[in-house]
Image (cartoon, rainbow, N blue to C red; front, side, top):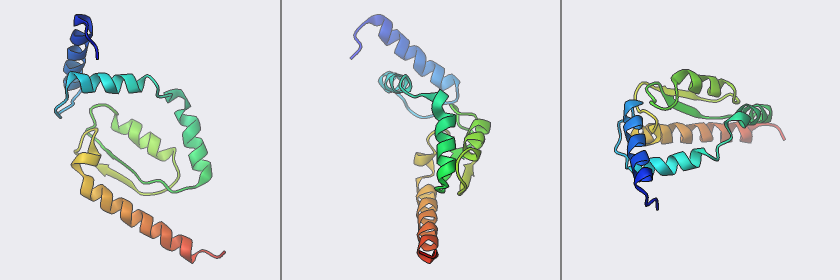
Length: 127
């Protein structure tokens, strides 16, 4: 737990920044700090390499995003989806960065349909 006044001030400033960037959900300074700590370990530079490896695997990918995401621009989400293997691309006009919360039912139904379709294709494929 951060105990210095500077760390508390920094956390509060991050919450303000998140709100300025379009975050509409409730978030505490501690939650913001946790997310920022986790981001320290994400290797964004290797993402293209990982996407390429997935594309070579030809494993279908279900990808969903919202165009009003306050953290990831819609164009970046679209580019990432194009770098992955084929599969459903589901774009929501609203839902922000947490579409899995705001569109949980629709996404769950889409994933189940996607998995069932792939299972049927696998069953029908010659062995």
